[in-house]
Length: 411
Ligand SMILES: [Zn+2]
Ligand SMILES: [Zn+2]
Image (cartoon, rainbow, N blue to C red):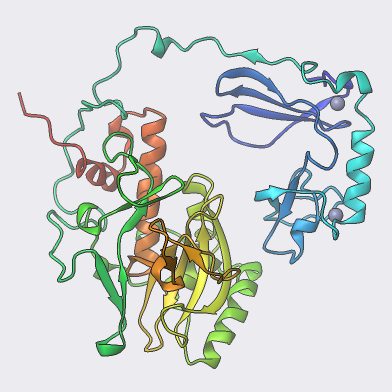
């Protein structure tokens, strides 16, 4: 492919095709970007943007001040720093900060100068709309196509499926609350599962508390997991890989800080953050949610408890923490607050001042079971969106979905 802006050759990104985009090409000279097979467009050409508005900030666990740099291409900044995990940040664009990397600034301005003035206008780069898809012009949708209100699921596997408990969920003494820790010192928090909508089977209807695209589903209403089966080894995941040096460099200082207070990081947390195949598995499953480890910070519920932030949604509307009780118990909690950066007073919807602890919610007994549910739901959300046949689901995902889809009467 040749560039429509400067006529130089374009380079194709080494990415597998997805339902959202078949191919991405970048010009080797002016860096104009063209996508093929992208949603409503057969060819989508991004228009000119000014040099200080056009680049994503770089993001890498292996470079402390990554966001000073502009992300270029192929795991490298515009100024040429390469790290194996480097990507463009979902948290923001690059440019306009006092500490912007001067070499990135020079590179961005040099690339900008390669765009001829008369090719910078909004309409210059032409997009080609996609032809309407045959599925939307009257063809019959298969009975087991996910997304149909009357989807017909295949027979469920016989016996237990993965780590799902047979229905119904065992009763819990306290509906809507869970505690962390033992006895009178236990911390009691409102509890729910914060998840995305599963199509129309578990709608995102904003009837419950919600944070961006995550809604608070009562724990009693979500499929029950065999919590005792999660021992921290991620055996259900398969090969979790070796610890990565650049990830233990993230967890080691946190473990050292916690040790000063007599606390330790649980094995499932360390595995999720450091093992090569688990690392960022949640990022790949969720809609742009990101692994981002920070802490420890004191808990708003008790100054001797600690929290370690490990996951956040794209806009940080919801943030997940490992909660470490001073007596050694732990759980996964979530909040609309980033306690690693802000402690200021906020107002609740009823106008009263919200104490920081008012916005802390229990959501899973451990990191491994949190990851298990998050990954199954991520698989289902994508499969429903892509209208996959239900027969393609794993036995666990199928059984999980069947919890929300009433069985069709047998004929
Ligand atoms: Zn070009
Ligand atoms: Zn730079």
